[in-house]
Image (cartoon, rainbow, N blue to C red; front, side, top):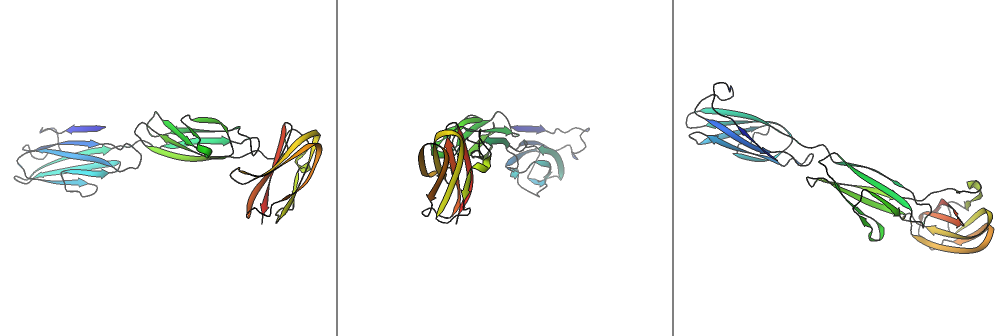
Length: 263
């Protein structure tokens, strides 16, 4: 948005020291917080040539760019007769554009029932949204659902084309859900080297699955079991690189996840 100031010769305007000259001033405001790309143009009236002084900055050209938000003073001198005209103006800026959001976990390492939301704050509304995520995921809604485990990026753009981005990680729930205490599910040893033993008890006989996943939620090892109410399984992890992994035990309507370290 451009603003035009008209300063006319008049005895009631104390900042014009000589009735033979005056200056018109045009300037732009910041569109995005902290951009420092506003500009101002001086249009003096008088005999000329003219000398210019913009402060702060001590700039001496007729037109100036790269202005940050703040208060400015322009002094113009008509060098043919020493006439001096001054004008002041304010470059404004919108508030900082930020995001307010959060994410909710999936119910298991391979479940795609997580969610996330991201709302624009500050800047100049209205806002548009652009989400990206694993496996080519995209969305233009502030709230997204049915998310698999992974990292999602939300970029918010306001009416002035200012943009800010935030990332949200959808994890998965840990602990025994809907059955006996989490102590019935164990991984040993932890840290482990070549093998881990996974033990779990179910309230009733059920078919079950053990999944070994990395931090990105990628399933690396899967073992399926026939109906049972107790799991005692040793899994070979010697081919996995050192790092942090998750073991997920899933039965009929219940799941549980624990973290372990591969040395």
